[in-house]
Length: 70
Image (cartoon, rainbow, N blue to C red):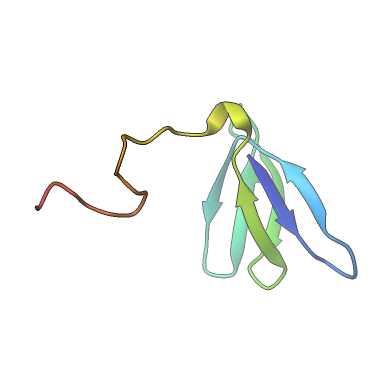
């Protein structure tokens, strides 16, 4: 995934495999589980999946909704 943040006047990106969210920010990990960076919530813009990490949903199902209770 790609973590996009803005520490100053320009956006920057860090590619990572996984992350953990904590009270003050997120810690980024590589494929072996090593910490490769930290981004405070104050400068975090967004997190984007790489094309190979996207998930296809069934027709009519939207992410974040629960259709099992219908």
